[in-house]
Amino acid sequence: MTEQQLAAVRLCFERLTEDRSRIGFRFRDGREFLGWSSQTDGVAVFVVWAPSPFCAQATGTDDWAPPDERVPFVEIDLPSLQFWDETARVWVDALTA
Image 1 (cartoon, rainbow, N blue to C red):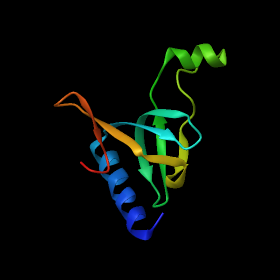
Image 2 (spheres, rainbow, N blue to C red):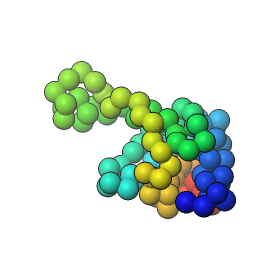
Image 3 (cartoon, rainbow, N blue to C red):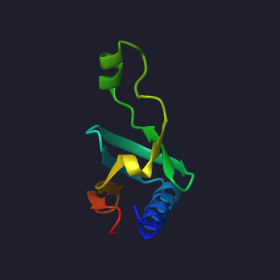
């Protein structure tokens, strides 16, 4: 990732965190994320997973979401990064919005 790309991703996550936007993306390993970003440290984003009863079923626990996680930007499939536009009620490409 170039410095220019890193700066654009950093600004994007700062905006999404400030707006408290619901976000979704794919990890490079194929997992999918749905939830919110809570902060960024410049090279990674801290994410809060959306609650889901499927998590409790899969883990056999009372946990409705995986633990919060620090995700380095390089582990995110950036073209998949989207946020939920509450007004239009559609998913929007976060890097071009």
